[in-house]
Amino acid sequence: MASRAQIAAYAASAIAIWSSLELYQRVRADPLDVYNFAKFVERAEPAAAMLPKSAPSGYLSDAGLDELKGQILYHSSLYTAAPRMMRNSAKSNAGQEFVVGNFSILDWGRIVRPYGLETFKDFGNGVALLRAAK
Image 1 (spheres, helix red, strand yellow):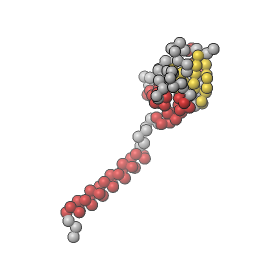
Image 2 (cartoon, helix red, strand yellow):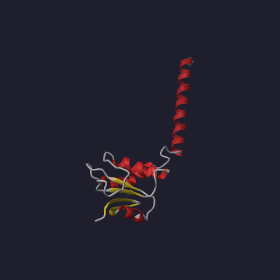
Image 3 (spheres, helix red, strand yellow):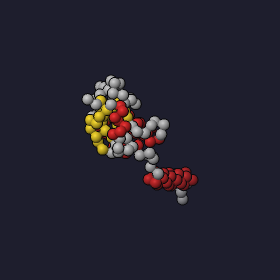
Image 4 (cartoon, one colour):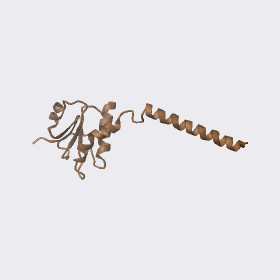
C-alpha cells in the first residue's frame, strides 16, 4: 500500500505535468510576441548590417513615436543596429553618413526628399539605407 508521502508526490507530479501542458497550449494559441517584433527585426537586419560601426546613424519613418507602430519600427531598428549608435534624426547635417529608413508604406520617396536624402540601397518591404543627396 502506498504511503501518504508517495500519494502526495504522485499528485504533485500530475499537477505539474497538467500545468505544463496547459501553459504550452496557451503559448501556442497566444504567442508572447504579440506585436510581431521579431518580424520587424528580421526586416531591418540587412540595413543594420551595412551601418558603420564607429559612426552614429540617423533614423526616419513615416510612423511617429506617438503611435504604437512607430514605436515598434523605431525600437526594432535600434535593437537590430546595436551596438551601433542610431539617433532619431534624419537631418543630413547631423554628422551621420547614413539614415535608416523604416517605413510602414511602400511609397516613401516623398518623405525623404524634404530631408535632402537619397536612397543608397532599397531593401524592399519599406526598409532603405539613405544618405545625403549629392
